[in-house]
Amino acid sequence: MKIIQPNCRVQFAVEDMDFILSVLGRKLGDAEVLVKLLTDEESRDTLLDDERIFHALLERGGCLRVSTHFYFYILVRHVFRRAGIEDRAVADYVAEVLAEFAHAEQSRCVVPGQPVPLDYFFEMLAALQTADDRTAFQIRAHIGNYSLFLSGIFPERIRERAERRGFPDLKYYEALGRSQFSTASDHRLAQRYELTDVFSTLAERFGTTRLALNDISDRLFSLGDKNYALENLLHQDRTGEVSGQM
Image (cartoon, rainbow, N blue to C red):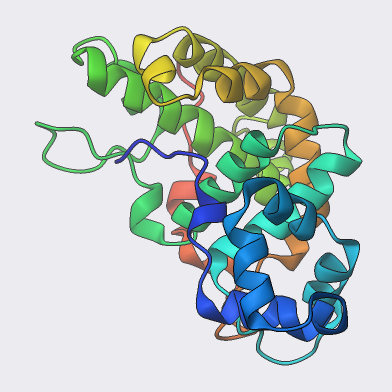
């Protein structure tokens, strides 16, 4: 379990530049010009907001040769802007959460001293009672991230299990994620890692960010295999049987 930061935009790969050139080639000129634009923060952000890049990600058939950081940032930034969330750092942070959690092991809560990862929210909340200051901050951030990830990407699964089997509903996930982001935003480490404003926004607008992610949940798939859905990266008993105990 690591402290996730809003740094998708500094992790783009060579194939991402090739993709941008294939979409905006006539406008940019050549790869050298693109590199210069991407190294300038303002130019980079303006370039990444170009609607043609977003539409190309959705419309091109076959295997997309782009990094997960690029893919998630472009999609998240687009739906967040449409939802009125203009802060690029917030989009960058959530995109990085998706990029991390696309790997099943990264979505698990690993606490120092615990023999196995904590897979249930009630276990994470219980661990807060004895955790040291840094670990408590990490657990709170993880609960916020995981609540947003599950409710944003798998809303139908949560609804179905809440209705048929009595598991926590979306309101539970929203309340839990909002409260943990709010508490984490006041922590000294949030200021140290420049996450105070990001966590505050996610706490205040958790419902809006969740709904924005719902808009792209059907599009989140493995870039290498169209039959390997992001949903399959998480064990069913972990995403479905999350305890509602506080």
